[in-house]
Length: 331
Image (cartoon, rainbow, N blue to C red; front, side, top):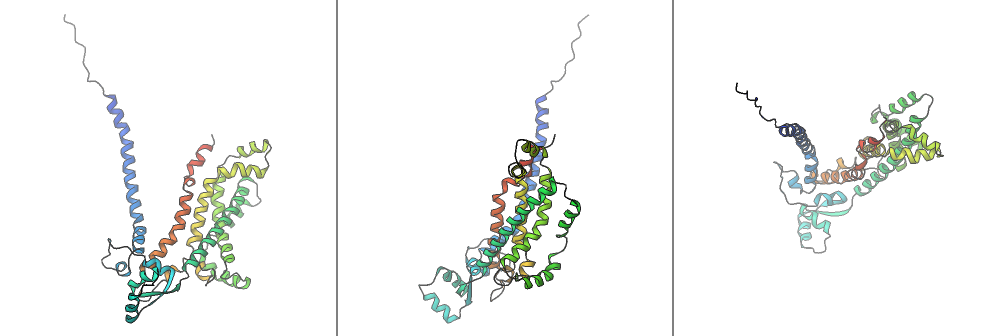
């Protein structure tokens, strides 16, 4: 009998299967990246348009349909930091012949205006920096100590105290503005930097305590116990063990507290007038003589956005929570 031939099978291409299995995560990741980029671009459209409007002339800013390609100008920024008046036809002709005009006067000459003095926006922007910066430092500093106490010690009535702290953020700011206004008038804190710093610190403190307590709770107590056994005091263990591990939480709390103090509008509008007036209530009041100065408002909004971007960019390395807490997971 003839020997039966062995059955033949098609060779299995395992490399193709491996490539297909590895290709799916890459395709999925690519789709997610494209979607994230599209969402980011859509979100940034108002910011980009605001930045473009800040460098437009007044006719270009109010043009219908909107102008995308234009000749940049600094009229909005000059108008933001200066007070100006409208020139008559005769004055405008005379000003065009002058050679001793300042750079700002030359910029505003296109609007048929001349500078009469500095505006209050520079002072108000400085007030925002002082008040928001100081209140953020105080609120985060006190919140770190309070959150550590609530996280590590058996404080009597801990849950009730935490709820009481959180309840300060439940009421809208407008509800408590009138009582605070009357109290500040009696204490001499109305329209003062100290009054606004104390107010923003108290309102930020409740949020900061709750946020930081969550971060400190995730730091294992064994690290501190080991440090205490090695001869560290409680304060040294807190400073050398807890604070470095809670850097991410402190950075995130700092950013959120600064944004609240920086953007706050109601208190700044009703509890200040001249000395401590911050930038948020001032930007909407830029109207101009011949209509709403959209380029000036956009310039003010753009400048007002810069400090928040700087703070967020400076703390960007600590805002990713997993970077710090990934190495201290409890097994």
